[in-house]
Image 1 (cartoon, one colour):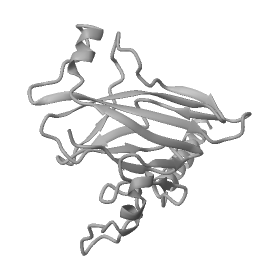
Image 2: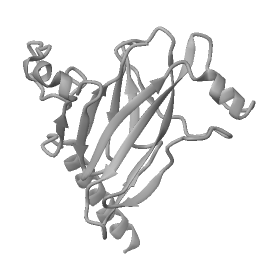
Image 3: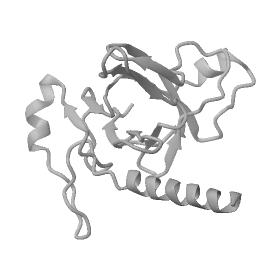
Amino acid sequence: MKAKFYLIVTVIVIILASLACGSSNSGVSVNPPNDNAAEVEEQPVAESEATEAKAVGSARSNPAPMGSEVVADDMAFKVLSIIRPADDIVIEGNQFNTKPESGQEYLFVELQITCQKSIDEKCSLSSFWNFSVIGSSGVSKDAEWALAGVEGLLESIDFYGDTTVSGYLPFIVRQDEIDLVFVYEPLLFGDTFYLALPNQ
């Protein structure tokens, strides 16, 4: 009996995960920075024979421009700045923090998030499950979460409507990595979005 119950639960979870993966990003909206508004509307989208044009912010091939506010999952996201390299900050925090391998460096992305739900409802974020970056290498890098002694990092948090939180998300990327794109992905339900980061 227990085996049958666990089998049913597993099937339900797989179906729900499949539905979540099939999200069309219909819940994502991009508010471009004022000085780039005209550029965003006219921005050409790179296409191949096998892919269709993607809406701004809904794909790596057409990320929202730096400075945009992206609204998804009842939250407004904005990248405020980046620090690259950020190796000194990490090492000063604790000498036992993970050191980048040769040819790699730390990237800190300063993120601001506002919960747009009612004051009685909460938004939830996981600093090491929801965020990643993808660069010119095409390899996705998740946020580092085991850093000690570093102040100002964005932590996993539950926060209520009309509340804004901010902090840095640390990533390890290749030193020669360019065209970095910041990615938000919900755990199960919601919409993924892509936001361009400046080259430094």
